[in-house]
Image (cartoon, rainbow, N blue to C red; front, side, top):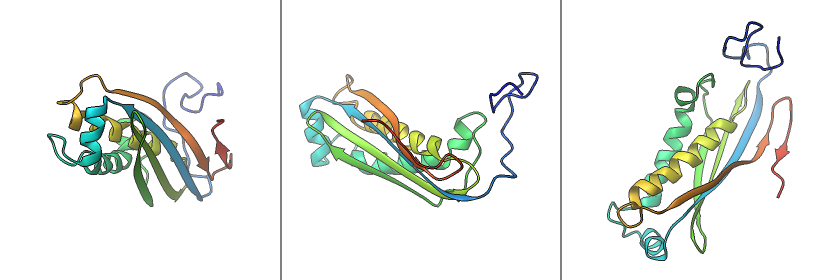
Length: 157
């Protein structure tokens, strides 16, 4: 083995065999944000963007995306999620998105949380692009993960 878990000894891509791993409760939290002009931010906050409820649609999109992560990311295991929460907070320049995904299983859930944030923010962009095509999605990252062999990890400040 070459030390890379998604490559076999010949360098061929493979899905990691997690069959022998113990099931543990796992949680991952990811975060990102979207910057926008003040008028767009006001429309999103007030719920009167041209396409309607921006954050409501983005929340549903993020949850749906987490559920489809195994279909979107090559070599990612399809997971039976216990829960996915997608939350938003207004900042001075835009909207921050936090996704929390959890399950009891044999492999991590970080990609599901990251995918939820990414698609939720893309949906905010789509829902508000008529008002501001210059919005910037940024800072998508894992904030925390718990469970599994490696235990708890928290992103440095």
